Image (cartoon, rainbow, N blue to C red):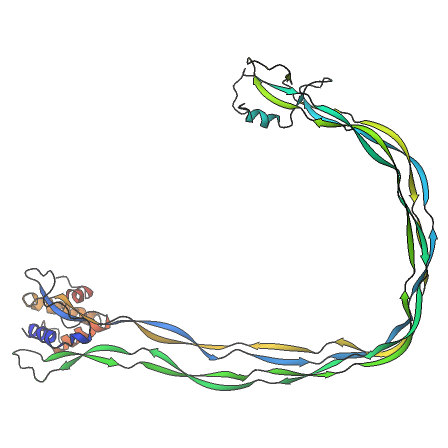
Length: 460
């Protein structure tokens, strides 16, 4: 009876509006002999890892200075030049065989002379015309017919003496000029300005604000046999952690100082215009010859043996042979260049002067070494479902005998929850142990639900 009054009192005193929308006044689909109570389904949480930055990435800069060496440099005073001498072209007479009718390769029905030609696309053409090349049955025959090719005579112009040229030499021109020579190149001096750092504090959320149900006492309760227990919804503030991290205030930089180049003036001979040649063209000599060319090729068709054949068509035969008809050629004589006109170049060497200069061997360079960012992993809790109130089936008073209470006490003790004395009586220690077991396992609180009995391994 005490448990029943406790459940009734709990249903009356729970602040339902602070948990969820009001539930129905009676249990849903209840059957005779079943008991229900309004119980609290606790909020559910999960633990997640979060990676936070405690020190930003930066760079360490190192300057490697430029390297120089003194060297003797050969400076050109008078540039190299050339003297040109013309060598006239040489000619010779040659005989050449000219093709007046090209060689013809074509497929024929046999190797006999003047046999009928066959199209290059014989198999493809036969297939397109309805012949089943792959699946034709024995004793079925097809013949290919054609209309012959025709030729026409055309005139063609051929060269019998190539076009030639005649060259005239124009000498190079010079003048004396002053030339500025760099004896020491411009350089750069690099100065490193190091980075500056500071620290900032970040407030990191470890666990969000939440609400939990806790048991309380109602001193005004006067019901006979009631326990005076009530459930209160308590707000638990969010938890934070202060994390200190190092940040770059100003990044490392460099300052470059320009050092100008040193120069020297010397007199040199400058080329105004180089030696060159003027070319006179002698035109080619041509003649006209006649030759035969193909006007149109043969046309083909396939006719099955036994069908009528149109007048004018010629039969190609069954054997396929590739026959070459020789080309018709003609011999002609023409004058050609044996050796073209050339210009013989006589080199005039340049003159030099030796001067000492400071030469850059290796440029100053900046080497950056990256400093990786530093991170830290923290654990925080996230709510995955809110606490709410619901009608749940509970163990009826008529079924709550000593044997059932003993099973509950033994099951709690086996799971390391202290139920007090194992006596088959639902006393305070047993109720406290049962409530703690329900909360630790995210089970509904406020009654001995069938869900709790199943979790304890008790069948009812």
